[in-house]
Length: 81
Image 1: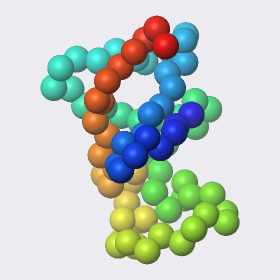
Image 2: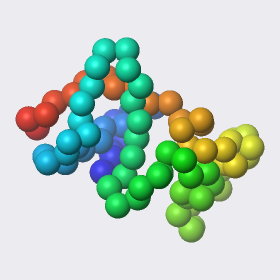
Image 3: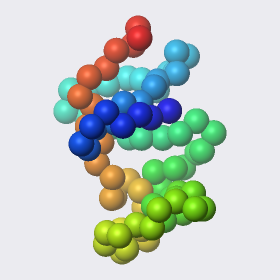
């Protein structure tokens, strides 16, 4: 579940029972989706929903694995809320 906060910043939920929410300083952050194993390995173009607005950027990016075209940074983490 994600919500656009502003600019290039989005806020995502972490499930209360998630065992994947372990972070170390200077470590890599990977985005995934429950029930969608292998998501970071799929081509970005295959993850777009039918009827989504057309992507007007570099279409070569749509043929690459998601992990290679998406950058994620953890700005804050709150396990309680």
